[in-house]
Length: 508
Ligand SMILES: Cc1cc2nc3c(=O)[nH]c(=O)nc-3n(C[C@H](O)[C@H](O)[C@H](O)COP(=O)(O)OP(=O)(O)OC[C@H]3O[C@@H](n4cnc5c(N)ncnc54)[C@H](O)[C@@H]3O)c2cc1C
Image (cartoon, rainbow, N blue to C red):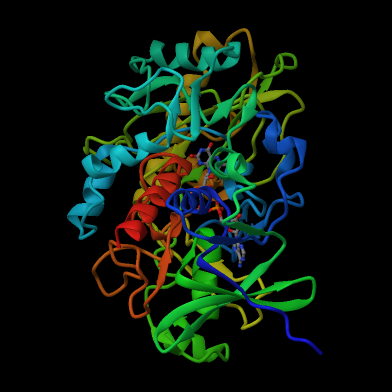
């Protein structure tokens, strides 16, 4: 039988998500041949492109639908984590909120050894990607591939959220990425002409016919091929065959916070003893692979509405608040309550037929978990244990967030909409009851990071150049390299990481 031909290019990029799409585009622009390999399919589902479609994508064909291990500090519940498995990755099913986090988040990365990643060094990269409808200014870029815009037709209930928070003394902010992050206001979103601006659609779709580009979809990368200490390509499974793609220059793993550590572990790059226990020979003993898993958390403060809310015309996540819990005196806010036009039970539990949610969010969690292989089979789901609410700080901050959301929900501004509070419900009042409620319902804010941490300590997986320690020709570029999660949504940071990776590769 004839052997399958090996496809060769300068760069192999694994994963066509938020960061991977940027890497692909920038390497193409620089004249290189690029082969991007994606486990998911083409982004044809119309719900990907409609800004209101994202709730309909959850658990569907384009979702990895990760389930965590039972969470011992959250009543042994397994949490459902949607993750994009499609061109665009999670940027094809996310909520389209464009937020970068606080400048101190990045300065603390740099202070902990991530040289080159301070706020002043990454701000130009955020701007480089961006095509903000307001034009270029100190905080925003114009002319980049990623369109960012304001919400033009505001929903009255999202406006009520802003008015209610203001009535409680919170100041209004025009731009969470601008001079003042703390306060209440309307989000800016990655949308254009009434459609989602995913990373794939923004960065790669416009150059899809580029002669130097090869796109392989529906292909599960199972292993990095390492020869004499150097990554020379990857192996992937497609249509029942095992195929190989070779990289003349480098392999870039951009498979996300779950996919990237899994591929490294399957390749023998990770904690040697742990890998031996699932029958994988060690290639490099890197104890940090799969450690440091963390995520922002949400808990539902859901209201039954008097009647169905008028349909949202944007992303159903129009307004939010940045505030401080009683647990911090840092400049950066640690709470990010979010208004949703729909009932959003974070534990997948009951919901009223008509309603809305003021979602208490905590954005500087201290709990840390792990990702491990369950077996050496590339098709097997890994053991994902975020260990939520293990740290008392997180429990207290989440209770503070719930209290704050309830105060907002009781304001006069919501009188035209509110019928009654659905969760936590009138029977849950004391802080002890709220702690219990938090453990019963806490779920993901969808911002998992940290499993291939960048840094200089023993648990770092990549150095500040994003090079995997101990292997030549191999980088990781996606949310997995984030050492500590920024105080904001993680799509814009992942896109920035793609920009930075491309600069580092091209400068090398
Ligand atoms: C429901 C939801 C809502 C969200 N809302 C927002 C929001 O409003 N704003 C915001 O900023 N952030 C939001 N996020 C988070 C944000 O979208 C992610 O943090 C970001 O997209 C992560 O980018 P990434 O490049 O690390 O990974 P991804 O974008 O997830 O890309 C990884 C890609 O790698 C592929 N892959 C994985 N394993 C393999 C393999 N073995 N072989 C081949 N390919 C593989 C995946 O299929 C995927 O396409 C949300 C996320 C979700 C899931």
